[in-house]
Image (spheres, rainbow, N blue to C red):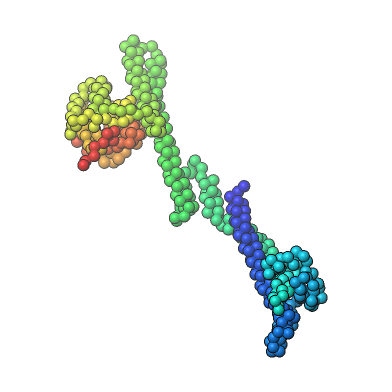
Length: 461
């Protein structure tokens, strides 16, 4: 069932129940008031009959004349009767007849007053003391005027109820259509968004209502999707280019080598060249796989407790293997007495890749005899690892793009690499809820700062 239909039905049912309850309440209380009011008028007629019939010989002429006037103010289809204590009829007037049944007589003796209904007729019986003897006076009538009004009210309520329900159904349909129109517009706009035009945005994002909040949330999702798709396209394009370059070189050298017979030394040179290209391909493939791993859901990465200083020593040892000529000094700032302050939580393999990449980059872009300085600073909430070199550095425009995969600055085009070291390090550090920053000046060197949260934080008192 569509929401529009459901809203219309719910709106109709709620209003119908309320209107039905209101109509029944009006009719019930009107009927109850009419009945109670008419019983009071019949009771007055019973006393007027008793005064006129029984008290005629005990009151003065003026009072009797007054009782007579009251008696003759008759009700519609009125019947009045007076009975002795033994149940003998002594007075009766009216076209119809109301009998004093044994049950009614017994009630009058016990209660002194009885009210009952006989169809549309209402009856009141009273026990009246006259000259030390009890008489029973019965008065009954039909409230023709008010019964007709009540029937007219019932007709009006039923007709009004039916008309109101019809109006509610129609207005409910219009209301639900108007209420859902912004949502339908959002759905219509969403259906038009394809993978090729993720730049489009929903037009209902202005405002503070729920529809605007939904549109804003969806637009934020589109922003992330567009960024992800663009990054994917850039990544695939750059990766394809980086993979194609060594493969093209390998194929070209093999084709040239096979064009004619060559000396053994020439074949050996070609094989060494192809081996170097194959190693580059291996490094690139490993880097791409590591980047995919670092880009995965951080909640699925297995974390353990690690000591920052031990991690840095391992990274330095691995970096010296890859760059044998580098000179690397590591120092501590604010060395803590408690070893727990050096503990972080993370994935050792991934963090080792990130720190080794940073150290290797520093050595790679620092000339033939690179001199690298590193430091570990202990702060109350985090640990900071800094790597500084005295290499060729970068300009401000290049610094802003160092975390873009496969980006390489203009002044490092001649140095071997693929431009995935720092982007990979950034993804790894971010997955560990840390930060990485690069500060560099052209021809003056570069400083990379990695900040990771401590597992056991220190709070100042």
